[in-house]
Image (tube, rainbow, N blue to C red; front, side, top):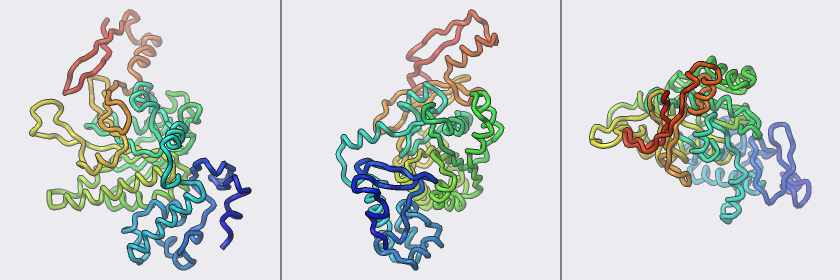
Length: 392
């Protein structure tokens, strides 16, 4: 095997890696993220040509792909013991750390803070929703939107498809999107309308969005398992799963199947978490709701999927209707304030209420004497909202 220092370093202070077709030089003390790296499975300790062939037959073609695999699944795929499979996964992660693709196991908090300041964020298309998310959808995290039908979940996903292709200077990811559609709600016409209304290059955005229609829960599990290869193929920076629970909820009926359903959902979600962190991409999932008949006060709706989805999502936002507008409320986050904001849905996808009203005025579609009066502290369905009242 070739010496690792010769293969990955151009000198003792720099690390050499590939990102797509481009070779990049980076300081070895800094963390580098790439989707396609000049590493081989046989560079991992304990993996020879025969084992590498078995891994590739199982759909694991890269060190990154091996690093995000679970030991249980890998043991089944390559017919090895769980301990051996776990050793291969740890070896892959260690190789990525040696190559500065992953952070070291122990780092100081100031280093992590510095890394987070340079993290990419993508605008949702609404300044108010971006403010709720402190800048937009971020990489290395799973962001969950849940709400009843018509609350704007799929509209947010369509708008994100348009925004993610924008350059980083315009609050985009400058990358492609993989859209996993389990409910049959994706419409290319809607994405084209949003892109055109925002003045974007609609044909280019359509080409940058890869759609995967899924028809049953087993297919979804296989798609998520093979997601790493698709990320490399499409050079995606955003993964959208709309919705993550609909198929499992339809197929696993009754209390007798609940444990199996939750276990399968748990496997999918943890795979998405590992993919987001190791591939340095953003993951957005949508979730359905269910009613709590025993709730006498407040909003009786709660997210489906129980604690499995609640504990796995990095950020959890609840969407609900409020007249012609929508309300987004931060339900769970490691550091976001627990607040809410409003947005609207129009031909631009999701948009700010005030900006939309101002455009309507300029186009002469509304009474020019219309005034915007702020009304705060309105309580509705258990929320304390700060809304805008439109009065003539």
